[in-house]
Amino acid sequence: MGLNAAKNPNDKIGIYYDSLDIYASYRNQQVTLATLLPTTYQGHKDVTVWSLYLYGNGVPVAPYLAPALAQDLNAGILLLDIRVDGRVKWKVGTWFSGGYRLHVNCPAYIMFSDRSAGAGVQVGPAVKFQLVQRCTVDV
Image (cartoon, rainbow, N blue to C red):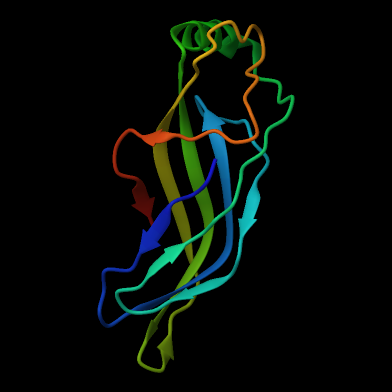
């Protein structure tokens, strides 16, 4: 799954992204390994694009999630939350802020053409997802 982009809509404030981890969760359980995003400075009105992948081979899920997962797999669609957690700093002129915690959540659907995936989700080398709604960002 590739991450799309982040936009800085401000024309006076730059953003330093530092120590950001991205991962996917299913019903609030992390189901991929966290991937560290590269440290990035995003200038005024800039758009930053990251090209990375999330991996979750053989990830067990909590037993209480099994009925919901089986139902989602049978329907051929899975709702995951793509999450980013880390730290950001702001730059205004020559002034730098202290660090702030950043939490981003992007609900996304993954559709499967093969509904007979069984107990595990077996997908090809890459899976595309469709965002359900805009991402929520908390700083």
